[in-house]
Image (cartoon, rainbow, N blue to C red; front, side, top):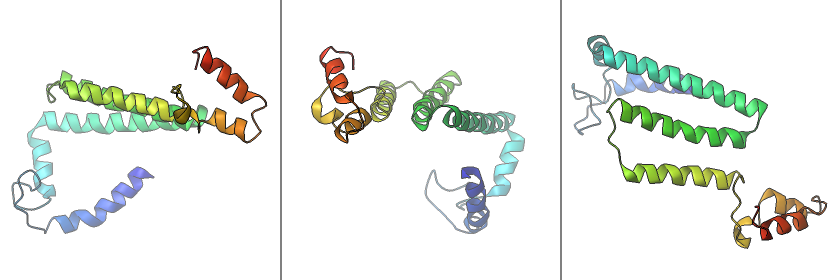
Length: 163
């Protein structure tokens, strides 16, 4: 659905962008318009590397989406979001490998922060601080009476450092 709506969106906007003049560096095409589709196709024909990179992007996005749908179908959406964080790493490593990206320690730190946040959000890692674990699924079920002793088990495992 994402690709379908993206196509519909740009079928409407692309013709409009062909006629809007622009003078902002980095946003405008060489012709002074927001978009110049003819120039874009000429560049693809002129620079084979650009064409191969475009094909690579299409294949990688399709692969990641197909993988994500399969993970959601056979596992869970939480596992899909965890795997989706790897997309960022994959793109960054490819960028470093093709030298279109410069290594930055801040990006590495941000990636680890992204992964940590995803793992905490999906309750794969539960922080052993009361206010941070109060609304985890395990504690919520125990409070609502559906846990059948799960809260005692959770507290016991937390005090042993297993949580």
